[in-house]
Image (tube, rainbow, N blue to C red; front, side, top):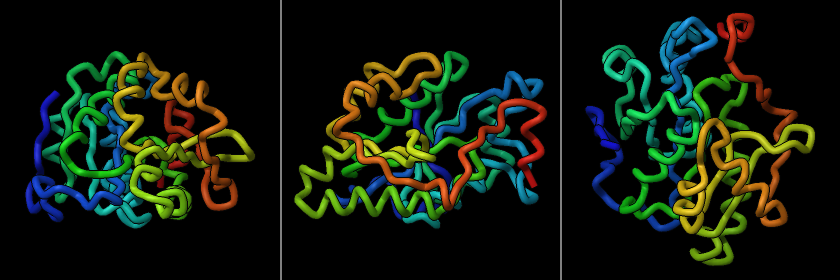
Length: 222
């Protein structure tokens, strides 16, 4: 996996993050197989690429730093989307499924100094900054008991009690999640094994967790 630092980066990704900082990790590598091969990152939403909207959601919710995992038509994503200030992480194995993108993203984080990563998906435009902020607040409450508690956090948004995105992984969990993320399952198995330690934050009143997977789902884009 390789990283690409986009232009006009702020803050500087080369500068270690404060130990309490949470990095936003956006998975945006999918090729849109059921959308006729249109990469989801480049779908148009509110007059611009969907990936730009997703980055803005993370920032508005409280993530100062954002890493974006790209894969399908990565060159076009770089050329057409304004991802200034983001760290772009190439995933050449994107066709293997979301698990490969999660691994690539997590592998880009060691050395940043961050305590946790908040993971979101590019194809869920119904999830806005309010849900991101709630998950970050729950993590911060745990982190107030010490930096090790912060690095051990597992927090997820919930919709009518069912776990969804965004989901936050403390740094202590990154290696374990990366080792088990395969296919399209992502961190599902890892979180299931640790169900009692995952803090669920109800977000059904402020967000809608639909995915843009098929042509019929395009009705959700504006």
